[in-house]
Length: 114
Image (cartoon, rainbow, N blue to C red; front, side, top):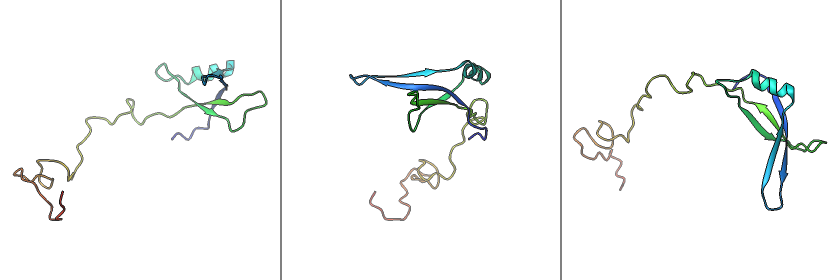
């Protein structure tokens, strides 16, 4: 998680229809749009739309919060290939696994029926 203070952006109002449909209308001020522009990352900006505990006096039911989380690496993935797990008892064909080095089943001495 990022230790930066929360940045709240925009307001929203949920509008529900008798047929069960709904629209979430979001509104952004000029200042909000400038903050969104300032926080572009690779051409994108992310916000979390959250429901207010109580609607505001103006009927606003939702608000936006800038998502400032960034992965540890540029790609968001570990660098290089993902290593195989070490000591995996469920691996087949490896010594210490379910199949012994000769390919025969290894019951592990626990006398389980499966």
